[in-house]
Length: 310
Image 1: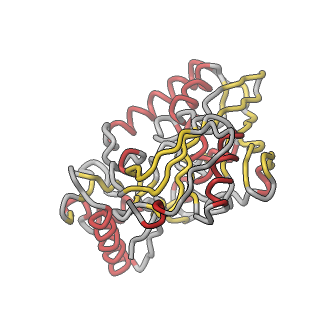
Image 2: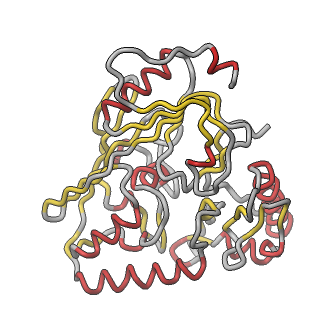
């Protein structure tokens, strides 16, 4: 038990969220890596999220939100503070306007839209994680980003409480939004889609999922693509693939300890069984170094480094 948790009081009053102490982050990430968080709050509503954040504030400790845990490398040392895990999963469709809970599976959501003949984010088919996580990181593929069809986001933060923010105020750009590190918790998103051909949309999503299945691990041993592609107007979809550069420098043959590179995709780092966050981090630093030396390009992490990596 950490010193922090020893001196932390359990919340009192009408608290309905589930609170766990010294909970392993490995259980909350698709990498299956990470030491214990001092506290984890499992929340099923915006009000429970509010109460959990108030608990963190009352104890003067930081908090971090994890949805599907698919884009995170969590430190072996864990996290000194509170991890908030929302479970807000719903879908409401009104003609071409769709509202969806933050913890709905992104892959499921894209499939559901295609089945309804709604176009706008079909290129995100098969991407792991939750809708909320995809919004925060502005996930995308093949020239489409989730923010393209986004209208507004229901949020909670300590200053504004439960509120809705239009996407124009959230600083969306390539694989990023101002929601990252902002203290805002995404509760749901509202999207405006366009009517499309159901059959063609379903064929397209199946084709993309098949390509993704060939190149991505089927089991939870990675955090998806580790590095961002490089913005380059001369390339297809305006991006130079980080995976291409990594393949050229021999990434697929590299490993450190139990951390390696997926044989079918040079931009996916994997846990080969018992890998530590430190091993994954060391491997990622070596990959960045070699790309910099050969191409004079500085790769940027797409994954979030959670906790202490010093």
